[in-house]
Image (cartoon, rainbow, N blue to C red; front, side, top):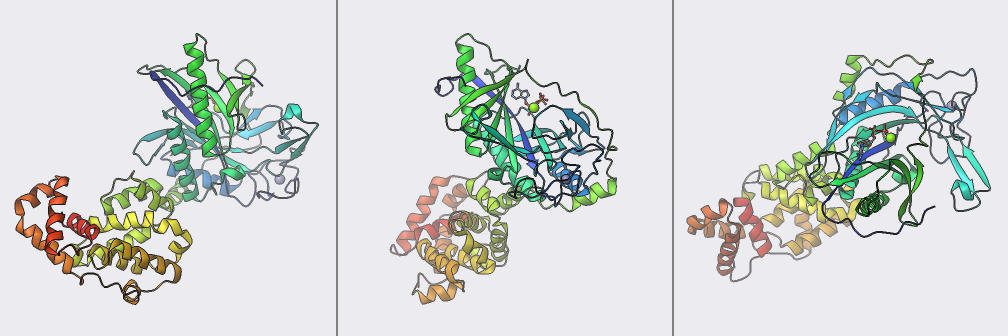
Length: 492
Ligand code: ADP
Ligand code: MG
Ligand code: ZN
């Protein structure tokens, strides 16, 4: 292995370009071309048969469930789902018993598409095709790399497990964005039901193509492909390292050569595996044992119709309800944790509650933030939390019946033992201002200062302090100022 130094962060004047290839294992019961069980973590070589061991005379039979998952993925990524065919990709490696992998080449099942990151950026998808996984080798005696090993063990349980490989366009511009892409893609794959999303079990495996170019340049630089990153953290570290390496190389008069590099987690650097000259010639040719896959239109349509809303659509919906940006941490967290219905429950209650100003986005915004900040910290509790009780609690807080601190205490008790927030509050002796009392005062203050109110309503946020000051005065300092602020916003 080379001993390249760890180099400092990239200097300005350079732009990073990243394209990712993500392999996703499909959650089918059986393998792609045989009836062997598709199951992780079993006794080695127990889920095998003549087909997935590549024995002569055996023939592949395509798994319908794998095709359906591939179509679900394509539909979720806005791809064109099309008639496709299988090819043989030839290369020799002991974990691949047939010495070729059945994959898709120039006619993949899903062509084109995109996904949307929480910040709103769209990342292009080039293709998402079906292929079979290889077996798994373990190198024994030494550090786990083949050249230090005394023996290598091979397990064919994974050979023939269905994969969809999702190839992105070279649209990402930083390690953070690459991580955000994988995070989003993982959420989409889980939403389709195709994947369990477990990177640590190898259900999702990421290869990163990385290049740099002078900022403002239209042309792409020469890329390196980095393999062996098995967490979002190592993806980020590997990309950052590789970007710095390439920039330093170019700035010192060198050129980047196209090659495959290995990410060494322990050493924190990438090292060359094979150059373009040593690259395999895969000699792709059409798989003669399989007919083209041409899924009927009605089937594709019914699969598309059965998909649940994807994370970006859910973020849009929560954003619309709450008035918070779709990319805000609160909204992203609510969707990530699947607390959408919690927020919807509050929205629904707000709609028939005149006391909080109708279907107030402010109330929903509070709900989103609460769901994200409070409930998220106790997931187990969140699952048991009665949606309508939570909605009631939010209403009690936003109407000034409870202070924020009191509401938090009540929420804690609800998470532990359930119950009605009003009863809990009473039991705890929380008798803040009479229900509606604070609201009436806030409304009076607004009515008394129409001019300031108009300016505040049009976005002059600093006038909030003016109104809060008057509320404070009117209540001789007894009002909960957080509730007063929330009320003020809900009236806007
Ligand atoms: P190959 O078939 O050799 O893997 P592709 O053209 O299909 O090559 O690209 C593979 C991946 O590399 C894609 O994700 C693509 O976005 C990305 N990629 C292509 N060119 C570049 C580049 N100059 N810099 C970074 N990524 C790139
Ligand atoms: Mg590639
Ligand atoms: Zn088999």
